[in-house]
Structures are given as structure tokens and as C-alpha cells.
Length: 443
Length: 178
Image (cartoon, rainbow over all chains, first blue to last red; front, side):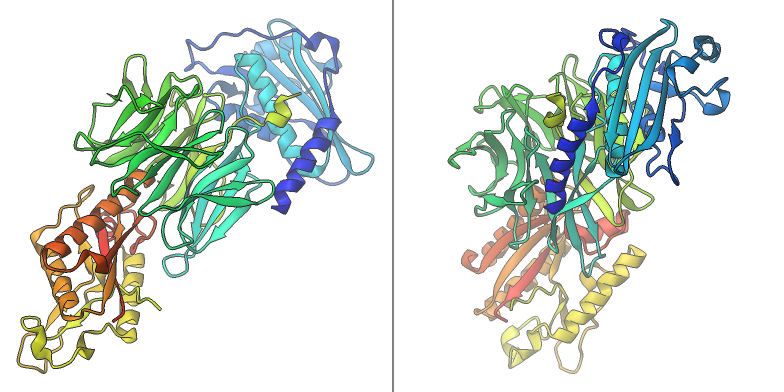
């Protein structure tokens, strides 16, 4: 709670310290490198390790974080620094020929120095090597604790400049950790940066927690908690820590999913004796039952504009994905392949659905392309769960088991690049990617 | 305090509960509960072991054959079907409840880790309800039974293999009032 409000204050400081558009040529020059048709050919980019002038070691490897972000997206090939013919940190030292020779399409340089009051000044510039021009240049003055955030913001700028799609590195994830073994299990609902760093616990319980879901404005998280001995759905404000029960009916209370404007919550409730999809009006708690079926109906997810709700149902004998309008009409089955398809989650553009599919006993995160119903497996791990899209739709976050431990991972939507996220001790599961940070987007 | 133990309930003279001459013998004891915990730990490290900690040896000493009543019913993957072996376990628990009218039970449905969490929560409830329905058919009043699902969140074995999954796909009988 304290950490969260501190974070808000930090944001304001950061925004004040952000000096936009240092250099005139950066204003309108958006590179239009089209790589959407050739994602397997990642863009070669040279990121020169930023210089550091100040006492001691730099608290965060800012350019290293930028490099990791960009590579994790699957759209960039970060060239090895040992191949660089020069190591510029300032505009005057950039020789484009040096970068053409190593076939870098884009170049990132930067410098960091200590400035008064123990703050750090971070500058970076992004160049189009073949166009001989600067695409972006920004300066930040921040505290040590904000250096990772600055790195993610730089990654977002580079990503947008070079792909035309907004970056989603400066976002957060929510997830559940489990530690303590069988005898003394402890569950924590945590929020961290999109790369898993800077985790903050917002709820701790000896009873299971699951299914955190961000409100569309990023201020609240709905989740399921067993702290009362059975499943109850709560909504908690992540800044104040205040929370309230939204569903504590007879039977299971589960699978919260926010409508696109955050005014309604879809749920799976078994108050009728069978798990059915309901929509709750958040202002007055009024419930509307959307499914009426004797099978399991759960894991609702709204389409981006709220027209549809997709969900998991085994009404056809095994779990499959179904779609209906958000008032419960026009039911349609979406998956027909394989015997287990579940946990559907719409992409931000509404054209894809991430889900979990079973193939020969292996549970993989996958993408269902709605245009042609093609199912694309994204992973080679066997116990995946809880897929969700980055707010820019370019990556999928999911949980899986690696070497016997529950971990989080991201995969680019083409399936080409997978990254394990850094997480704490214990098993981690139930991840959900936050919406964009609107405080930053306003600028 | 509710007794949440899932240890085997040792029932002497299973054929004729009335002949037991007292109900003390059918109470799960705290020492028995500790044994059950130990069994769970064994499952944690080895990923295998007897379902529900059914290592309790049959108690002899009386004329009738002693029978171990397990507090756990197991299932196949993504199934709530109660097979013949597990039906016998349900029947033994129904007999126990019939002989002990003060006892109530919470039927706790669980799944293995495979698949998705919310679906598993629903599947756990379906398993608990399947056991409850069979208990009702066997003569136990529905008002003495409640169901709850923990989905995949309360494993008794922490492994990520078939042995652990087999142990975790279960309904536990958690008795109160005994």
C-alpha cells in the first residue's frame, strides 16, 4: 500500500523531470520500417552501452535493460557490442558508416551522469542508420529508483519509432506467488514491472489466491481469495489498498473479467448449483445471468469493445471456447480442434484470442486467429496457464513450469521469442498484464 | 474446531457398525492425523505414495476383519466419474455417516494442476457434487453435506508428474461433529 502510493509520487516526479524533444530533428521523423510481413527477420539494432560519469557504479544497467526489452519482443536483433567499430555516446561522435558496415539498421546511444541532489541525468538518441538521421532524443532527470522505469520508457519510444506500434515495456504485471510448501503455504498477490522486477505485495494470505484481473484504468485489481474458507471475488484499489467483496454467493465465486470501460464485471458463479456466466453491474451489484446450461461455464473475457464475451464451456463434452454477445445471445463455438481449449483472452485489436490448448497431454499457450480459426501454438512447455496479451497486443504473458518451478514467461505473438521473467522464491502463477500506464500516456 | 483431517478413518467391524459396541473406535484421532500429514510430506518429496495416506494398517484384535475407510475419493483427469474402487470408499463413508447421525461433512473437491485454474475450480465443484449425489443415493441427508472446491490450489502432492496428479485429483471428506 505504502509502496503503491510512493510509486504514484514517483511518477509525478518523473513526469516533471521529463524534458521532451531535446533536439529539433526528432520531432517528426518517424521511421516507417515495415516489418509486419517479415517478423522472422528481426530489425538489426546497435545499442551502444551508455556511458556513466559519477561516483561508484551505476545502480541500473539502463542500456542493458533497453536491450533486453527490445530483444524480448522478437522484433529486434540486438547486435553484439564486440562487433561495434566505434562506441559513441554523443551525437557528434556518431559515424553512420561504422553502423552500415555491421549492417545495423538502427543505432541507440546514450549517456548517464550524476547531477545535483543525487539525481541521474539520462540522455539517449535513436538513429536511422541508412537515413542518416535522428529519430528520437530525450533527456530524463530521475532518482536511482526510477532508472529502470526510464529504461522501459526508452524501450517504448524506440519500439514505437521503429515498429509504428506503441511499446508496452513500461507497464506492469500482476500475479500470484505460492511459497511455504504443503504445510505452511503462503500466497501473495504481487505487482511488478513488465519484466518481473520491483515486485510489490498487495495481499498476503495463507489461503489460495487466484485470477488477478486489472481494471481498465489500471487502478484496481479483481481477484479470487479463499481467505473466508471458500472462493470469494474481491476488488482492491492498488494505490490505497482498500478493497471490497463483490461476489460471495453460495458455491464458487470466480473468474472476474472487467468490461472494457470497467463498469461491469463478468464472473463465473455457481449460486444456481452450476457454474454459469454472469455480468455484474459494478455500481449497484445487480447480476444478470448469461448462460443457462448444465455444464461448466467459466473464464469469461470481453472483446475489446465489449460486444462479445468469450468463455470456456464443456457443454460439448470437453472444454472448448464459446462466444456470445455480452447480453448472452448468438452463442457460437469457436474451437473445434483438440480436446481441451480453455482460458480465452482477447487481443487488444480483437482479432486473436490467446488460450490454453492441450496437444498430446501437453498444455500450451496458443493463439486462435479469428479470421480463419487457425490455432497457433506459442510454446514448447507443457503446463502453461493464464495467457494474457500485452496492451499493445505484441506479446503474450503466461505461467508455466520450468525445472519443477512455477514461473512467468512472455512470448512474442509470432512465437519466435520467449523470455522467462525474473521472479522471487516460490512458485508463480496466474499472471495478468496491466493496461497502459495512463499517467504516462497523457504526456 | 472442525476436523479437516483427510487421514484414513479406521472403522472396525465394517460389516456391522452396530456390532462395534461404541463409536470411539471410528473417530479419527489426532495421532492418526499426524500420520496423515507425514504421508503427505512423503508425497511431496517423492511425488508418489499411497493415495490419501492409506498406510494405516488394519487393526486386528477382534473377530471381524478390520477395514480402512479412506477419506479421499480419486478421479481420472477431467472426470467426475466415481469408479467401482472409489464407490466402495463413498459407501464406507456413507455407512459411517449413517451410524453417526451427529456428524456433518464438507466434501472438498480438488483437481490436478493441468489445464486452467478457473476451469479446475469448476471441475473440483463438480467432483464434490458427484460424491454428494452418491452419498444422498446411499441414504445420507443432503443437509448434512456441504461442497466446496479448491480447484488445483490445494494439492497434497507438489510434484509435476503423473504420480502427483493422481493424488491431487480427489474429493476429501472433512468431517465435523465427530
